[in-house]
Length: 474
Image (tube, rainbow, N blue to C red; front, side):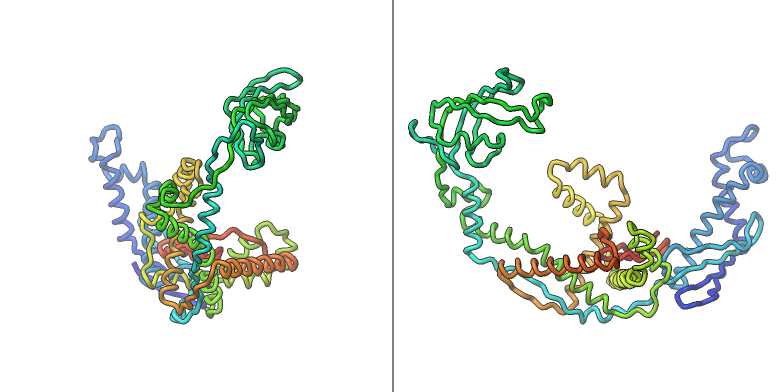
């Protein structure tokens, strides 16, 4: 194979590839020898069919298959040997080809620009940790205890009030007729929570043990018997018991019931839980700071084909007129996204960052745990959608890159209180909403779902994304 780099125009390059007919014929002979062992032709024993017979029968199909393989292998090798990473799918233009002929073709490719990533270590960002005050932990434990009350039966003459537990049997009718599901035994209602039928609880306030109380209620939209939906029903309720909530004693026994070793252990667990509630959001702020700093880096040339592709993504859902008006603003956004993606991808490659199968499976399990009750559906989704798995792999890849940048960049560690953390997140949310509002008003862009960074694949096409920063497509 002979490769000549021609027509160098910035990032655009043409590579002329020449493979002599002797080499091409050797590929053809290799393929004929392969099929000879399996083909069955009348009058010939397996493996004994002459090559000329095979050529007459299968020549065109064999050449087509060999040509595809040679083009794929040699174009990949040509790019690798010349250290060219394509930004987008290279175009192949066949000049000379055919059976018993030389193969000559031209690879037209846009190269991913060289990126200087030395400045990444100079990036400054804030990293937050939340100091959880003892009072915050105690407050959370009290809330848990309040939501898990013990109930104690009271004297028969004691009337039920809001917050009490009432146990009752009931018989219901609509137009004086019973219906399917109109009876209930030992039904437990905590008055005030309104969890049975709307307005039902309030009518039981003031009842006492052994009372018979008639309660009127409207059957809901989701009532199983559709012909009774929104019908007025009368419930004859026999009060079995009235129980008042007892204050839960917060001690080691209480902690053990919640899965902790003792009360001190429970406090540590709750403190960590509160901290974790802020961690992901605060980590996102740190990541956003890093990405904004990377946006300031300079890249002399950004591949035009990647800008065009990103513009198509950004303008999805916009009218042609709005897209035309917003073109300059969209181009600016597109270039920023591509630039950040290129820089992150270069950093990832330079540091040999890879996503292991175990890391990918861990992330899939994490996604499954986020959908309780729908675990099988989520698992089926990833099993049936390789693109979703690839996207998830890209997310893990990007997270690993950002984490390494955090290790190498200049961190400003900040310990904040829970209230300060809430204010930081609130202010950040407010700024985000203001920016969205401004974009809507000026019609400069449209909201897009975030797309993860993908690892560069020089054998096919480079992919680089960061937070919806897509650079190229396979």
